[in-house]
Image (cartoon, rainbow, N blue to C red; front, side):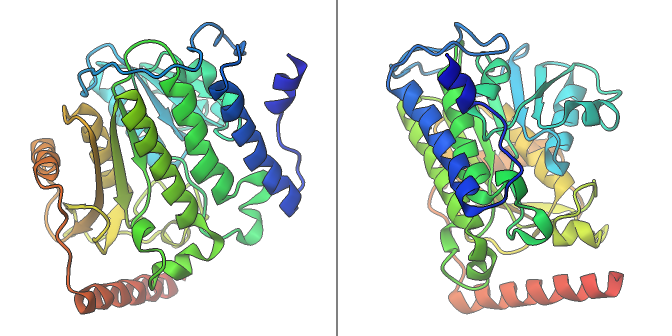
Length: 355
């Protein structure tokens, strides 16, 4: 209908608070219409893929199977493209890269990637996601926005509430309501989501980015419990290492990188870890989460520390240990604070040196 097409229209270029609220309202209305049981004719080939207002209770094998369709939402980002390239290199899955600018990807990192199908869509527009997600078996969501809207990073409604909250919720709804087996949803979030009222995360949350990510996490756990698919929340620290195309983040802007000696990977249950995370390490962990046969839901942080990079088998073992040890061990408050202050000092110190 004309009203639904209008709901999926592109956001105007205005950056006013009213326009930001409009994005959130559009996303909410998109979910409300579908949950209410309306028949929605999905555009771009999505018609007929979605069920009307009923819960799915199928319990399926959590690990992706050879030949499955895997959608990487946020494939145009620095981490998303690494995940996409790694999945395609395995040669076992039908990989879909969901991103805002497909032409740009075709002319750069995706030019020689075999087995990749690109879909141009914005998670703020629920209806635009239909073609890429309706029959996908698993999703890795690597979307996100800068913590602060400085120098126009939040323009055109590209702010935390519309991307990290409603964008994730739109992705969950359009995927979980589709056809075929729904195995697993892996969400890239952030360290500090559950600690956002304490220093230094309260500073990072000044623009509400951790609040929005917390809502996205909650939506994932809620959908997973209702629909019966496996859910994984991965919380990285400050991201370092290439690719460096996105210059909106401190570690990318100054091209900060870890020493060759700091390639070991540490997975910590819950949200108690302190540290930095290499994009290449994070991408590898996200892929191993997809291939893990762990059922149910799990949340953990991933950071790098001194040591060589682990083989994939070791990552798999760490993931299994997370499953068998749901109660996260916590560090003493003084130790946590000391680590945070030291991390902040080193990060800003290296940034100044690189200038």
